[in-house]
Image (cartoon, rainbow, N blue to C red; front, top):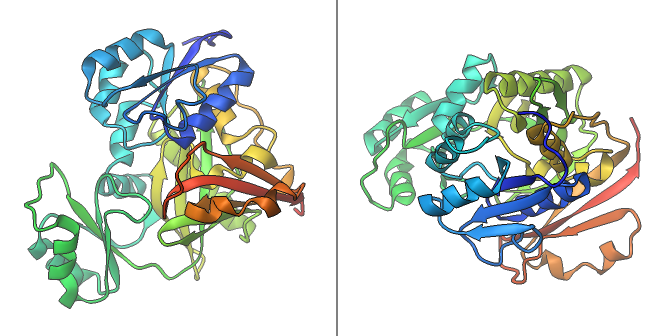
Amino acid sequence: MSRLPPGATLGILGNGQLGRMLCLAAAPLGFRTHVYGPDKNSPAELVATSSTVAPYDDEAALAAFARAVDVVTFEFENVPAHAAAFLSARTQVRPTYKALEVAQDRAQEKAFFAKIGAKTADWRPVNSEPDLKAALEDISGPAILKTSRLGYDGKGQVKIKSAAEAGSAWQALTGGQTTHSNGAFAVLEGFVDFSCEISVIAARDVSGALMCYEPAENVHANHMLATSTVPARLDPKIAAEAESIAKRAIEALDIVGLLAVEMFVTRSGDILCNEMAPRPHNSGHWTMDACGTDQFQQLVRAVTGLPLVDPARHSDARMINLVGDDVERLDSYLADPAAHLHLYGKTEARPGRKMGHVNILSPRSG
């Protein structure tokens, strides 16, 4: 695909807050946006040029969406791969549905990391309670049992302290239902004694050119990202290796767009890959105010055929997620010139719901 001209339409599968920020990044570059998702009055729908509200299995709606756009990308990786494949037969889709298939399945994801020479926590595939008991003999507790697909922000996960909890953990994960899976229904992961959690966001354009945002240091609370800070407190060699892993991964998946890779840094200095997402990522929101070109602008550039630009950071930054009723305490941020507020247009604050984020900037220290 050659460079798309101003006025072309970027299609976005998913209509949540990441789609909203993609729409806002596309507009200054002259692109129209058309979002597709199942939820009406969604964050992205409120700012997109056009929107389609329909299920991901509605082939008539998908076909009409494909005719209305010039290229399609994703705002989250749990879009059904069959919907992406359906669109791929009718228009350009970036990244490909094959990259989605790997990122959507934790067992495939971990096997992929091994293939590119990246380490992970010790893990085993699990399809039944007997499988879980056998896995716990290999991975002594504590451990985490996770569904292979569709889990995020702590959903679809059960902590196991000892083998005696295998039965109750399996019941909690499955609800007593018989499981069906073409691969592994779940994975058991050993706990990691880490010194910090980091993430790297890599970008790749149509020519294969690669650029990375520097690693962010992440802190989670209640299984959800709470803060991301740059610069991360990392040895330069560890930071370089983390960026190398992200570059190897995005190339191996042949992604045009973004890939975010979440990693643990152990106390001994090893890097263990945790998860990846072929889309913009919550831990990259700091780039919106601390870099000349943020992750959303870089994704728009990559998928529309524009060149990538240097993602260097010009300021130190700390991103704070605003979750639930955090959004009701905005006065201090609104009065602080160093605070850059981004709200997602959601009118109802519920526990655990991401309502926005704020980036606190300070002069670059290194």
